[in-house]
Length: 407
Image 1 (cartoon, rainbow, N blue to C red):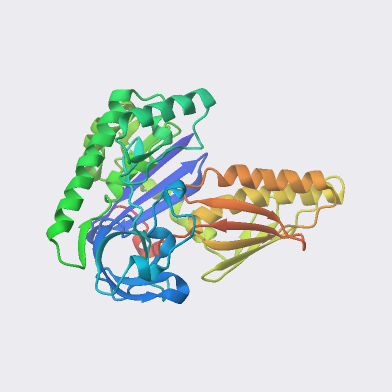
Image 2 (spheres, helix red, strand yellow):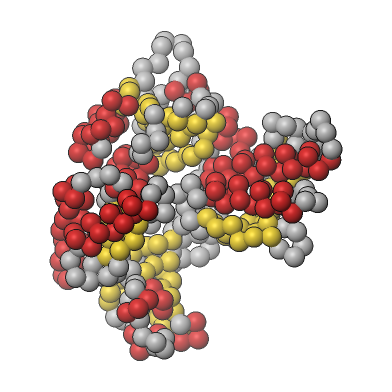
């Protein structure tokens, strides 16, 4: 049973996705700060150009200037790029104004990273006004459906446009997909029109708030039930589902707590699980444990057998512990929103087939991560190397004072 739980408060909205009572995804957003910075489209001004770095810094209206690399200035389609990369100074000059989109939030002491490869996500597809190519989600189940979706994408786009067909588009009619791309196309034209008269830096578009993204991005057919404990959020979600995902409406439910009873998040131990996930040492059910050491760019995870001694030989004990560790590592990477380089020191395994099974399990689990996650492979020292793209500040679990019932 996979459930989405939505907890509304006066100043915060929290979303948890649980499967068989285990927390797998968690999102929170302050209501006074509705909408994330990633995805925002801004009319920016070039502040300085760095030929040695093939990059520029641009003013997007934040305390720190944003970083714009040359690859994000060239055409999004590799086949449309020049054979020899030009100098950044040939493309951008200080004082120049241009539209950019935030692709990475300011992290630590670094400013945001921006691009001119624009994309606007809809329910069924991502619209890219100048990309000139078609993509299909890797999660689409069959090659026949992938081919159909690619053909539909080619039919509904205009020359020069690009679209990425999302998993939610699987089985959808041409009419539904046409409506999605037309809405996004008109929205892009509005953004461009406002940008023609705006003074830099000016925010022209901000991505939808968490309630909208709940329906647009998080709601899939894998979700069996959607529970919401706030009447206002419930009504907004219901209205949005009627427009974007009407077939899912029977799964939507309003949670009304009993007087003195547990809240929605308390019933599923959401905040307890978040606290457990954030500890340096995480206990595995078998008795083994994971030890996490994390910096801004590197996460190191050490797997130990702990008190688990197994029931047969040492190799079997080690293998089973590593399999359990791989499952939890994939889950905890999402909950911690870890990014950058990830090094996992699994317990040494003698048999190569066991090493391959552990890596393949982690690869399969990484594919379900909404954030781009790649298993690179085993290093010469026997460590497993991964990378995970981090686009925003790491979210922290609410304090215990704010984690109880409705406020």
